[in-house]
Image (cartoon, rainbow, N blue to C red):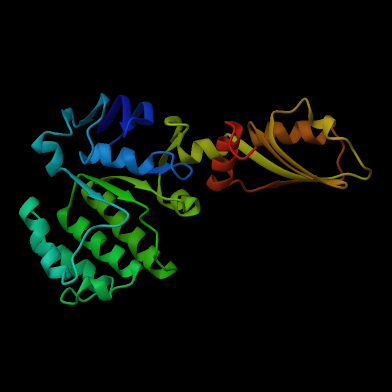
Length: 293
């Protein structure tokens, strides 16, 4: 388990994160979300020990991130990993092997073959998506207990994304690996993760089970026979309302069946429930706190 308690951090005197409290349970895949500059990458670097927190603590199975046991159980894959002009998959494997002696070459080659990558070719000739797959193969060969991924889907085509998710899911299911993944691809996270943490205005403003969070909201489309004022919805706990003539699309906070009964009392000609997704939820959560208003 990863525990983050009362974490504060500054870079060059500027406050980046404030009072972060978060827990990653074993065997969980957590999506770390937030607008650009929210502090997602900084938090991953703090967890991995690349940065040292100004205040607070981060515990990996009860020990601090500076402890050798914590470092050995964790692998951090940044958005743009470092490599030289002549680096190959093979040379990278040898380098990482010095830090993770238990690293499996068999697992590495298996994933390289699955991704259709040549471990002998210089990485400089790879596309961004191919480079990402290579480093994922390295990460999975380490078999870390905790895997941190920053913008993991960036540069991957649909087929590569599918292969990537299958490989990670297999490691989670078969080896009990826990994952924190930062991404702007929220629809990918909804399919891939079981929990989430939203960083906004330097702190974690919302976290928990993704399915439960989505189910706490509902969305409907309605049509009326005559023009109406938006004030007719004033007694309802709506978070978003889009009106176009006699039609309206509304997102409400609450159980769908109960909200449907309340909407039917307004006598619409048509009332239809629509699917709610994680991306919409993210937009509403962030806008509610003052962004893009």
